[in-house]
Amino acid sequence: MDLLKFVRNPALMQHAAWREVMEWLARRIAELTKLSEVEVSYTTDRMVAGASLFSTVPRGQIGYGRLDVSHVPGELLKADEERGLIGKLWRELHRRWPRYATIVCKDILGPSSRDADTMDGQDEAILRALKKRHPRLLTQDELELESEISRRTISAKMKPLREAGLVAQPKGPKKGTTITPKGLELLKQVDKAQPAQ
Image 1 (cartoon, helix red, strand yellow):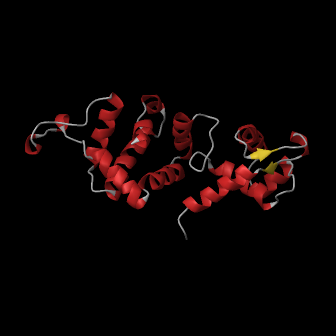
Image 2 (cartoon, helix red, strand yellow; image 1 turned 90 degrees about the vertical axis):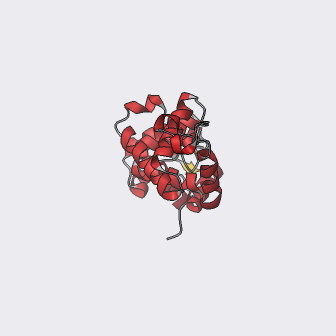
Image 3 (tube, helix red, strand yellow; image 1 turned 30 degrees about the vertical axis):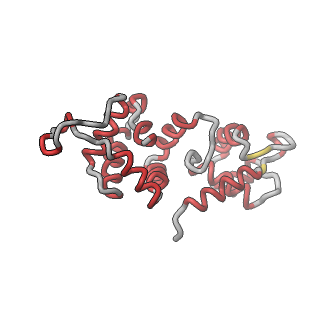
């Protein structure tokens, strides 16, 4: 349910993809569970407002404004335990809207946190290039060739990756970068989370 609450965060409503993401998320959850899009959207609205999910009105007389959605969190938890619903939604969200997903992740975890769900495609490409040449130190020029990411982007990504403990520059920034054991472990998590092809 945290995913729904954070994606529905009013601060994110300014983002161009917000409405599209919300509609997709409600539709996708409905496809993956036995819940309706209305139940998912209504539950999210009620949770963001801090209102109760319960209603004492008999089921047949319930209008949209009084819908009893107290069963929704349990259904989502069950779907997550049985089929990995939340991980699947995060991966799909990140694939379709990487910038929006990164903003949501930073909102949930804080800007310095890095794990398999918060890493974007460029972070992953940099780490994979470093892993390929590990333990050798790579300059930014070599990293640009290996990762196919611009030197400027690599330069911008280095500080957060270093602060997260995923890369190291033991001889200083101009002498090259290598991946750390934490970075290697993170790539293992990413590989485990990706479905087999």
